[in-house]
Length: 161
Image 1 (cartoon, rainbow, N blue to C red):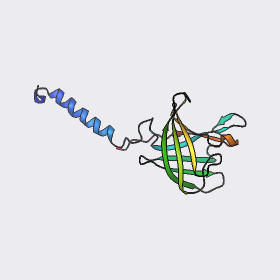
Image 2: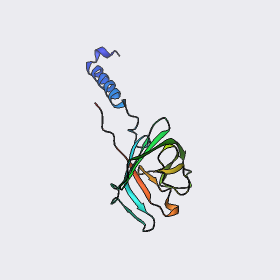
Image 3: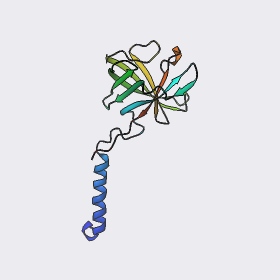
Image 4: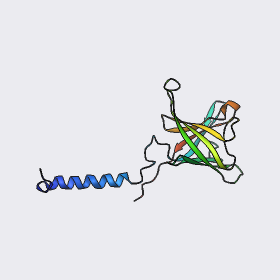
C-alpha cells in the first residue's frame, strides 16, 4: 500500500507527525508525576492546632525548583525579610508499599550553597519532602519539633509557541 494512492492517509500521517513534534517540545516538566519544575507554597499546616490554612501563604512565600540534572533551588521570603535562596542536590527515593498509601515518592534534599532556609528538625543541611498521589509536595520535616508543615503544588507551565 503506497501513501500516494491515499491522499487522506498521507495528510493524516503528516498531521500526526507535526502533532508529535509540537507536543514533545519542552515537555520536561509537563508530566504531572515528575518532580521536575517549579513548586509553589499553597498551604501551611500547624501541628499544634491541627489546622491547615492558606491564610499566611503570601507572607511566607516559598518555592522549590527541581531540575532534571538532580539539582534544586529553594527560595523564601518570610514576612519583613529579603529574598533568600539556597541550592543543592536532590535524590528520589521510592516509598515501600507497606509504609504509606498516600505517599508515592520521597524527595531527599541536600543543601550545598546559599542561605540557611532549611525547614526541618535538627538536620541543618537537609530536608525530606513527600510527593503524594494527589500531586502535592509536602515538607513536614519540622513537625516533630512543633514546627509548621508546608504544602506545595506544581506550577503549570504555559505552553510556548
